[in-house]
Length: 212
Image 1 (cartoon, rainbow, N blue to C red):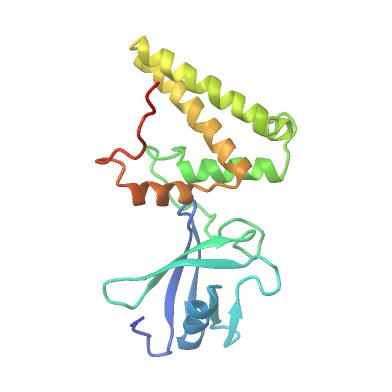
Image 2 (tube, rainbow, N blue to C red):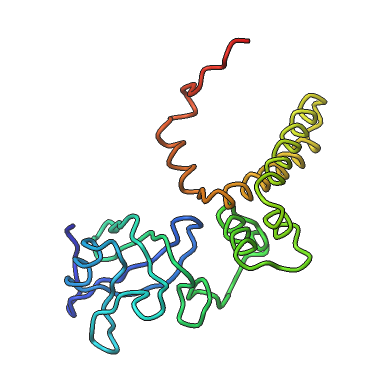
């Protein structure tokens, strides 16, 4: 990979969660840490304060596994997408970027698919009393599958009635329960995205319907 290091031999790298696209941290690499990252597929940086290499997770266990690494148009900055083990920040938060300085009211509160998946995953790993999501995981896959089936039927009913608002409501319910099933089975949003990318699903029929 051809990149342009600064006068100190460093290049900034923005680290993103591959599942949610959340920005996790901003760090720096030198030539050696870049080579180690590409070789081992584990994020390794250069500490400007300590003036030494450091591998994320080496002491905490919160490793970051490299999925992709992209340079900008000037090749003097990088974006790394990673699968992370545990919080990204040394304070224990999922991301180092938690202090909101400004947020447009039009976008505040909007829910992203990856963020919802992350929240559902947290409910599986850390049971919360009174949480419907935690209840589904406690009941297990059979209960989750039952709910997916029920919500699928509700989508069909709403669409057959040509009731747009009801269909939107039921599609949202179905999407939520599908995410719960995905978490239960260890399927990620990225897994589904990659499968859709391979299929060119917009223009090609993937599965042939079986004739009865």
